[in-house]
Image 1 (cartoon, rainbow, N blue to C red):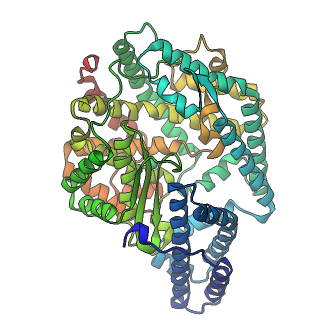
Image 2: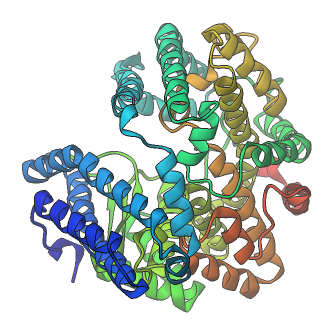
Length: 563
Ligand code: ZN
């Protein structure tokens, strides 16, 4: 059956609630392990059925936001999602308290219980109003950023419409575009500071109501980090400072020479004077190349990509009424991943078919799990699948980029490495902010500027006072919306770079490990999955050093001045 034929009718939430409550009673009263186990299986089946309907409606709504039927369904889902969350919380409470827990852990795996326990730590009815307020404040941030309407080159533009000008090879154009962008943030500096101040104080108060010393502890629980804490992450950041920052600085120096500039300034974010690498065909051509790539890559990816195309499980091209951005979703009842994107003619289109397809491939490989929690790992692990697929695609990227292939590989690998220090800076900033909730906005900004100097010393803002006093992070949505999430990208990237390294040495061995990792889904914690895949944990001293040497050598061998 194709995605377009998946039936949808609005779920009866009252009936669902009654069903779950009956099953929960049965579970709590179960005299035998078998009866308890059967009740869990029935709860999982009911949840999968409901969540599949919600996923179908959500996907169809984002594909055409003007369709009034699915718009109404999306509104219904938003309204009902606290009811659903409440039932899941009840289920978790029963699960961790079960007298059959030991045998249930053997049957369903320990990870379900560990993450259920952590999830329970993050909620109490006493914080319900605070959570609403937290949502309201982060939506206010999103609205403020989306409200940007900047007069530039004869038209009013949003920040994302301004973005291509920041990539212009004409330096004057870049500077004017950057000044327009930061002009918007500076004009709303006090509002961004106020919103964040309120968020920090509110989150701290929520954490204390839940018995945590600071919000940091609660944030780690919200991210479902069952197996590491701030000390491990700090050890990773130290490795980044010691081993990646110096290489990133050399790469920036090479970029400066490539661009023929005296100094890199805040508006010099481009990589090549000859422009960025681009795919050499239209969307249909790109999808054909992807089909050939996945057919050649492995029997698993061949079956996966056929499944996606045959099932109409990708909606890739931009069209009127379609929501912006991209994502990968999963419809449990049909064991089907779904890829949503907006192709725009840049290298981004190929990234969709490698990165988002990496997420989808993992979901496809873990579709045998009947525990919904095991379809999706925690976010740190999730990004390993996607970022590694970008590198496993290397032998075929030439078919997309033709004469731009070397340029693509160089900027992909250099970009993967230089991103990590910035990711660590965003993380360290949030740690110091929430450890010091009474700081003033000015203290926060000066702390940011100091952290930035340690991790991204190439940033010099002597001619931009707003950035010099520490305003850069205002544009980083995660800091407002998804606290402490950002480091996950850096942790996953170090793992993906290990796959790049391993596949250069022994492709078959690296691929086997990757498939094993994808099959394991979310059945283990981040460090558990890393161990299962035979990767070195990013928290372990020496991990970063063991991978960056090869990358540095590869990048150094490229004659980038001619790209
Ligand atoms: Zn991703």
